[in-house]
Image 1 (cartoon, rainbow, N blue to C red):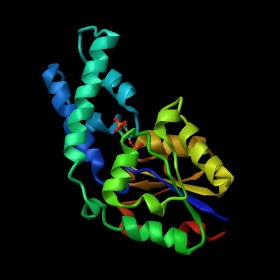
Image 2 (cartoon, rainbow, N blue to C red):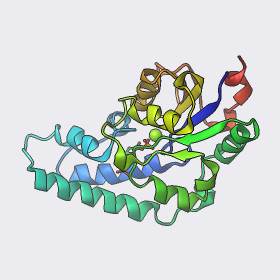
Image 3 (tube, rainbow, N blue to C red):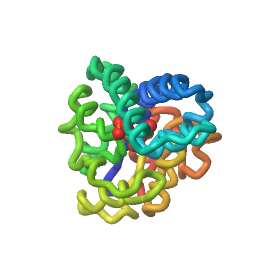
Length: 214
Ligand code: B16
Ligand code: MG
């Protein structure tokens, strides 16, 4: 039976995925690099430096380590500006209800975001207390699609990965969940999240009994 649900943050609980997109797009434009929503799909769930590498790969120029650091900081400053005024009203529809449903069913909740801004966003949304464990992205060696982050969350919760559901909006995230040996619940479109065990459009459609019965 399912004993824990481990949520991604960006694009699942809040629409911060859009803010990441806006900040990366502006940065790419300053470097003369084209950037659209399709390419953005590959960046979702991928950490800051790895995302930057994927973007700069489209340029014919070579960037030094220092230049990359400057660009990554710029993007992050822009992202922090965009998210600074978020409030609990910015939780995506169904997010709070899904978290509460998991807790009321006596299951544990975890957060698996590779974002180093995750703790800040949780504070803005006032949902830090909804989680039994929040993985600190700063302590990870690998970004999604590697399973490390979901395995770490399960480990902290003391639950076997096979008894966990992972909830993700990104391709990299679904791969990470499956590699961790969990049930992968995709948020978005089944045409994009082809490896998910089940895809729902958003958390208003989250029905724990559909996945937890065993
Ligand atoms: P930061 P998630 C990921 O978060 C985002 O999907 C991804 O677009 C972003 O690059 C990454 O966090 C790093 O974020 O620059 O704030 O450290 O989807 O794992 O919650
Ligand atoms: Mg995400």
